[in-house]
Length: 187
Image 1: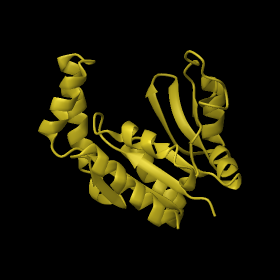
Image 2 (image 1 turned 120 degrees about the horizontal axis):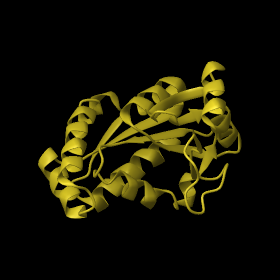
Image 3 (image 1 turned 90 degrees about the vertical axis):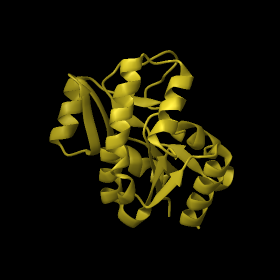
Image 4 (image 1 turned 30 degrees about the vertical axis):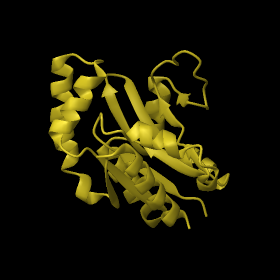
C-alpha cells in the first residue's frame, strides 16, 4: 500500500535540499503531490504536472464540495490546496506521495491520513543558525529575513507534534536521517 510523506520546516532549514536528495531514490518510489492553485502558470509549468491550475471560482466550488484535504488562501483569490481525488489517484498508481507544506497543512494531512502518513519536521540547529543561512543566501531584504525568523519561531513550536524531527546541523547527516526514517516507514 502506498503511503504519504509530509515535510514541514521553517524557511532556510534545508527542507528543499533534503527532499531533492530523496526524490531520485528509486527504492523509495516517491512522487510530489500535485497541488491545486489559482495562481497562473510560471515559465514551463503545465496543468496537471506541477500544479492543477484553477480559477478562484473553481477553487471555491471545490471548497464548498469538501474536495480538499487542506487549503489556504495566501492572498485574496490566491489559493493553494490538496485535492483528495488527486492524492488518491497518485496513491492508487502506487506512488508514495510527498508533501512540502506549512505546519498547518502538515497537521491536517497527518490527521487525514493517520498511520498511512509519516510527518517529518526539518529543524535548524538554532534560530541564530537560521538567521546566518537566510542572510548568507543574499536573496531577501532585512525586513523579509526578520519576518521569516518570526515565522520560524512560530513554526518551531509545532515540531513536537510531528512523527520525526530531523535537525539539520550537518546537511549530509540530515539527508541520511530523513532517508532512514522514510525507508523504515515504507518497509
